[in-house]
Length: 94
Image (tube, rainbow, N blue to C red):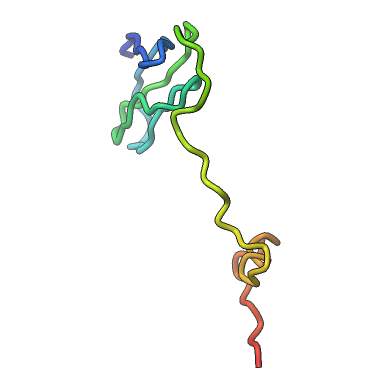
């Protein structure tokens, strides 16, 4: 197991460990304080992160923007998707 520390640009410091997983994983880790991606991986050596120091600066806005939902509540397909029936087919209109 490999251990080291990673620091985000906001000042948060993370303890990083790395261990062998059962299979290859594709994933990433984002800072829990500001949302910046600290690391991406596509390997069987998978890192885990634990924050050990809070950000040095006050975070007023997250680094990532939250987009408006793409769901149109008046759409038949969206109503079917919201019911949880992924195989639902909208009725034909005559």
